[in-house]
Image (cartoon, rainbow, N blue to C red; front, side):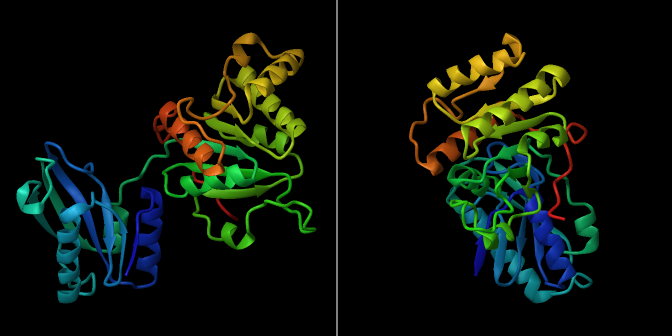
Length: 304
């Protein structure tokens, strides 16, 4: 049996795929909560006979919900014959959970009507990620399971000569979720102008001169349009000092330069392994970028 815990948007994409393929499933959703509970109202989980996608909080509560969902599937495997029901679960000793709250779960067959009422999961942020080396790949792996949108940009993306070691495997790129768009380009700094308003920008390419061109474009946009949420540059304090000197010479104000985050990541989380840097940087983005309203963020990028 497969078990996955994707983001809210990715879970809806899976539901759409299962519905189109005619795969019977039950949607379990949190309808009401009282007191301390593991997940919030609106949380969903997909249950098929051989797979579970999403989570309503884990533990014995989730085990019982999956068991009931599979009984419902066995009794009425088609949406036309299935019934929607609710069940209340006190989170106490009976379930082996000490949250102390109460959860009301809804169970309904996956159907077009169910999908039509699926709530939107707002993107926490839109990220313009420049650089597809080891750190960039580690960051993308984490973002696959978050509700965000990403343009992943690299000037080496069309390289087929074998002279660009460290680029992501094409087979892996083909499996990226729809909210992450691989964007090869000949001029990464020019891509800054195409970023949606209120985007976060992370610059971690394979060359310092390219880093400088891109972060200069980001900060000039910030100075002119005031719509950059986060401007991050990988590097040491020495790199920061050198870049600030050059950026000031390019006409950027001290107020704009104060918006540059370099080094990136949470200061208290140390380590230079790509995975550690990625965890630190993604945590920093989540800390600094509360979820945007639907009117403030771009739609999810497309692979087309």
